[in-house]
Image (cartoon, rainbow, N blue to C red; front, side, top):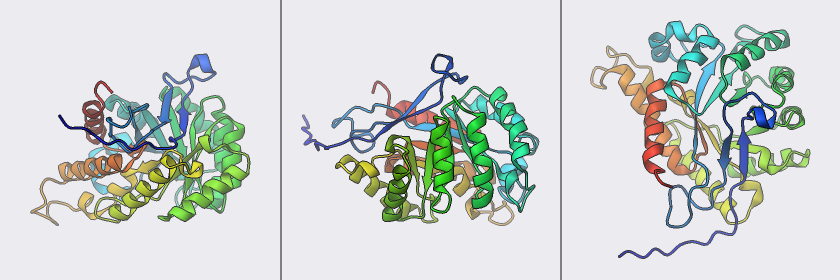
Length: 320
């Protein structure tokens, strides 16, 4: 019989709520509890897993063909309309929808707040899953559109991002004022991550309303460094550093579908295997790796990748 020497951690990761059902003032069909870990991933002999990691499906309101070429070629009809995309991707049974407002970027369609006012209500009608809503990665434009997103989704307890050092006050306070939570995004540096959490907390946003994002590197493209940063953050949180005890999100799809392994055609790389299957494996493997690093929210795009991760989580957490 094997006897385990268990580590007695002095703290645990904050638990955050994503989604609000009718009883709690929202219109979502479920409430997700995120975080709450008392030990490192899947060490059940130390502590039970309080909340399973969340698998979210990424949807963009505008996906350019050269952005994710293999994905685009397989799902051209689906991705041409974001509402259709949401309805179709729900069939793969994700826990939540992660909507990225790429069309608002000045270099794409340059959509404004007026667009947000008509589009977001359509999204709320199209899906009842909990929502993660991201801006367009343009600092000034996100400061314009995300406060409006927060107001239009008041009561739904969404997760809003990305708050960065240049705009965190506007985005974090808008989210908190509408009873949402915020994603704090920093480059791959544990000190910068801690600093931004402190800055957001100093505005009055509680630490249990913050999720960290470390600008995830895809498998083979900086994964090892990102893994080590996440692990250090999780260890610090479990050892009593409250600022580091926030859940972690990883944008797996964003980092997977743009790399060579998920873009190269069979003609370009004939020995790499069938392109779509290769890309799905690349996305799934990247997600599995970050799952072991301590990720609380994994954002994927391909229906098969989502199904793969759901199966893995079911087997890993069965009876836990």
